Amino acid sequence: EAGVAQSPRYKIIEKRQSVAFWCNPISGHATLYWYQQILGQGPKLLIQFQNNGVVDDSQLPKDRFSAERLKGVDSTLKIQPAKLEDSAVYLCASSFGTGGDGYTFGSGTRLTVV
Amino acid sequence: AQSVTQLGSHVSVSEGALVLLRCNYSSSVPPYLFWYVQYPNQGLQLLLKYTTGATLVKGINGFEAEFKKSETSFHLTKPSAHMSDAAEYFCALCRSGNTGKLIFGQGTTLQVKP
Image (tube, rainbow over all chains, first blue to last red; front, side, top):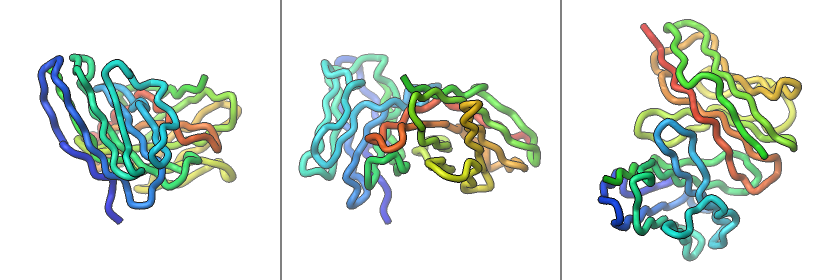
């Protein structure tokens, strides 16, 4: 089966610019997650979708970050405006259920804000 | 609150030696526990998981981990290190039966010397 697809793989932007990341989960996976992984740290959940509804966005900086999952399939994560501290790898993951059975992660998008 | 602590941000072993990566957790309810491996510029790959039942779980690539409730630990071991094991390893937990949010430790970089 195809894995979780993410694009772009790398992105360099200047601070105060905007950027968007795209994720296509495994077919049939109802749950989709976006994690932020800052260098030297473990991934941190930004937002979790169940189909096209938000389950948890408690750690999403809503003043600058937004995410959507229209039609319950693909998802887009946006940052506007970007700050230096947003430099990180943004990982998308999907799972069939919600019971913590483990996910499939994409390869991530490495964002550098200069 | 739930948390994961990985003892040692860097571990170095010789090829053929025992690998031991330490993970302790804090959770007020029975957790599901996971170990993930991350190779450079790649996403996270599941090594093994503990949900219920047998406390010694075996994973891919010869790794295993033992869930010790009394010690709140879930250490990862491999009897004989291989050069290809060099990577970053993350311990993670989620509450059993919850919405699937993973809480990660800060990671341990494993170096394997020839």
